Amino acid sequence: MNFRTQVELPEKETEIRHSEQILLFGSCFAENIGNLLKENKFRCDVNPFGVLYNPLSIVCALNQILERKEYREEDLFFSGGLWHSWMHHSDFSASSSEECLEQINSRLRKASEELVTADWLVMTWGTSYVYMHEDMQMVVGNCHKQPDKTFRRSMQNASVFVEECLGVLKKCREVNPNLKVLFTVSPIRHAKDRMHGNQLSKATLLLAIDEICSSCPNCFYFPSYEIVMDELRDYRFYADDMIHLSSKAVEYIWECFCQCYFSKETQMVMKEWTEIKKAIDHKPFRPDSDAYRTFLSQIVLKMMQMKEKFPYLEVQKEMELCESRLKM
Image (cartoon, rainbow, N blue to C red; front, side):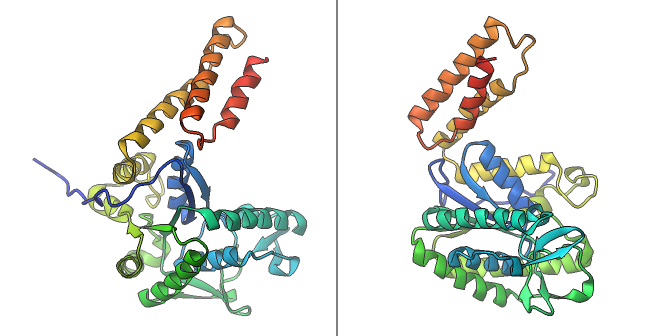
């Protein structure tokens, strides 16, 4: 007997390789997937603006990257002892405007360079609700706990997202014609919108993505939202707040993602790296012993062999870590 409804995953319509550059934007679920990609040695830049929840904020971020915007002090505001940007997550906030600007502009410059050569743009949309700053008349990426009266909050129509997203994708492909785009909708529920409002919000995102993928080539959709709603229909797959996902749920979605987009060769590289990573993380009983030094030397040799076979793998940090332990 089968006690669950399995979501039909996309057939092998495309492939993501270790040799490709990936830019990820969106909600904290984008960070879950992005961090797993990085752990498995894919070349990723995850959320150059920090977490962004709605499509219009992501479109605005992409436009700023395309324009190679340089933030200045007048683009920031001071509150609660920190300088903030309306477009950036609080991770970029700092006690001095200079530090805040350095963090923002260095990530912007990096993302601008990467977008021109990126193979993949991955967007995870979280909500259809958008915050507009009333005085500045601009979409914001983060409200930084400012008073509600500062913003106008509204749920946008699917047609708005389609128009804005197609517009920015056209600009992206003018500088990078081979760019492929992968969409997903965050399965994390926005309880503050109430459950009915959350469902309307997610449905709007799904309608918009479906239209974009139908009208724009090399655009794909991964059903993370459907996997959670239809397969993992149990609160044991949620964190203690009953809103975010548990580590088991993220792990299952990752397995589905691997099945959809990674070839057998890619998965073999991931398996080989996982074994090396476990060896690096191993805590020896006697770190000063000859046996441990031999063990470290073998790990370094394995990484060198991997680097020789796959020169695009970034293992320099791990190599340096092992070499520093060998010198102790």
